Image (tube, rainbow, N blue to C red; front, side, top):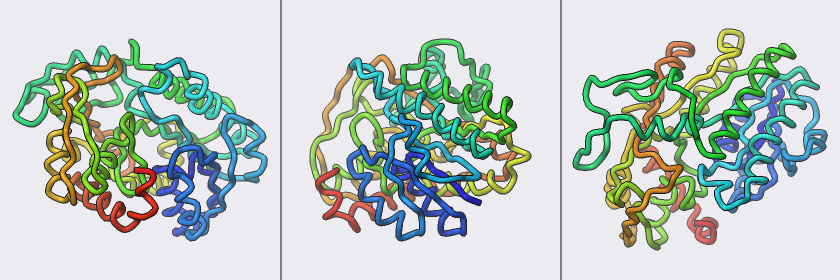
Length: 350
């Protein structure tokens, strides 16, 4: 099988490319290498046997250099939920929406199947903020036994209401999801949409607005300042984190059973066992760190921030037999190991 991975020199895309190339797939990566540190992945990708094509998904002709392919994994994106808020929506929408349309056109031309990596941020902010939350010593959490439409103590499932504002980033991903499903129906392509929670681990070039686990770990290796932003600056906000190798496990399972999962949308994340608050992440990093960075408190909450998100994986687990296997401690351990093993190259990026 010939696989094209857009955004394949990025964090998630490169992990998938290395895994799939190592398991015998013919992998081509398309990436504009615009994100700081993405160029460091080129040697890693080529060493694994993947072909790297430099090009921008916003331009249809970028796909011509990639040749024919049987499956598209669309991992190209502007990944920050804050993107577009400063009036730079053309980059966001160009990458996430126009780029997805161009990728789907290429898939249509070649009759290729599609796995689209979407985001949990397609769910509306107001509805997520309206969840009843208890305030614990280290984290927010929903009360025991509480549940509602599309949510419970297990997390957010695919039935959570989609009406309401979700940020420009979330809107771009939801619109792209719709295109994926429509292309599948119109042109007979087998398509799968994975709504990812927070993916975190080695090779993520974390920054303040995206990639908080890698950012937290990097500050505990290289030094610098951190800040708990929003919700009083107390660090109780919660996300579930998914190791990229767990995602690669899932993608391989989906490839093996495309007929049975085609046309479906799945929530995919670390789940309740993979959840962590900023306070808890800080404790994990302090136990492993070389330095102890300063910690600021920024009480004000940004309009796109949410206090709690955990992925309910039940549907994707039932469909594929997959489950995340790597807990937050391993995500953090692997991130620290990567930072130290590549300290010289990463110091200028992180």
